[in-house]
Amino acid sequence: MKPTVGVVSYIEAPDPTAAYLSVRLIKSRTIMEDEELPRIELKLEIKRNSNGIITTDIWKDCIYNDYWFEEGNASCDCNRELFWLRAQGLLDGYTNTECGKGKYSLRLSNNITGEILFNEIDETA
Image 1 (cartoon, rainbow, N blue to C red):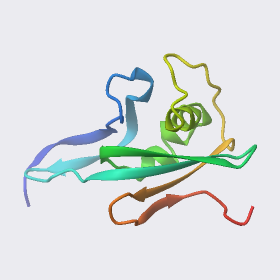
Image 2 (image 1 turned 90 degrees about the vertical axis):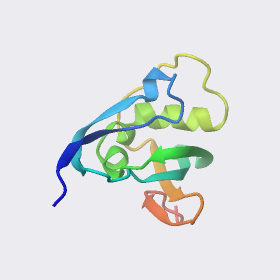
Image 3 (image 1 turned 135 degrees about the vertical axis):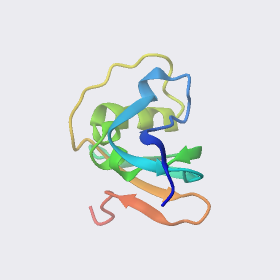
């Protein structure tokens, strides 16, 4: 067994200068020596449930962690609204958002392979 080197407890934001997207996770996992963290080109489809509008954004060189989107900060409507606005080019500086669940839904996929990683968007609705 390889010796433990450290603990992964974060996901990189698509824009490191945007403090509101720099998020630390509560859940973490141990990394082993010489282990490479998986980096992907992540495609985000963000649906505003009130009007059904879906926007798309691509996060290049993203360290993907499903926990962050399922239970972490990216599961909250306050961050999902920021993602939705950013995907449309409407995020300009500080934006006041409200916490909650259910206003936005996500579908995440590997933009290179097309593999669906996480999906909350109900196509029948």
